[in-house]
Image 1: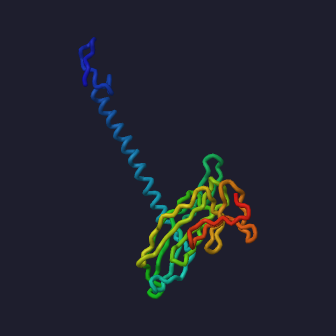
Image 2: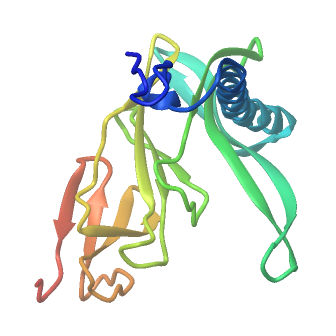
Image 3: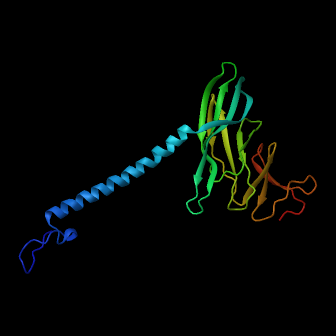
Length: 226
């Protein structure tokens, strides 16, 4: 829409460009285009940098287990991909070092031909991985990966569940009630704490709370459960 000045009778330009001549409007459009291009460039640059750093990361073995799948001997390998880094804190000026985590892998290998049959990559469901997950394979072939926590409700561990079918690894849905903290794993028992209760190690006499990975049931056999 164009307006006519009551005083001069000349066009005043569009509502968003009031008082601008053609050259100024053209410059404004170019500036907007340059700003948009810069934003798109940086948005595209971030994933390029991330995947570039992941390419430079190293895959480290965590554990491997000999298993039988449909009567055939297989090796199940569990590994993670990480990269060490050193950076300077902009506030304190102190150089800090740490490890960036890029994902975990489960790989099924033909133990006789030494050939990879299937490799599955997956992420940890928590940002802060406190403990390297331990693998447990139940009697029915379900694979469990358990990472414990020493913190309270703001510091979580995790439990992941997988299955193998036709030499393929598949991640299954599993969610532990968020009122429980994952504290320790011994064999097929994942020892838990409940709510804000202080965690005490499981006692054969006093009992405790644990997740039985064979039955997938939570057992509370404390002498005086609350």
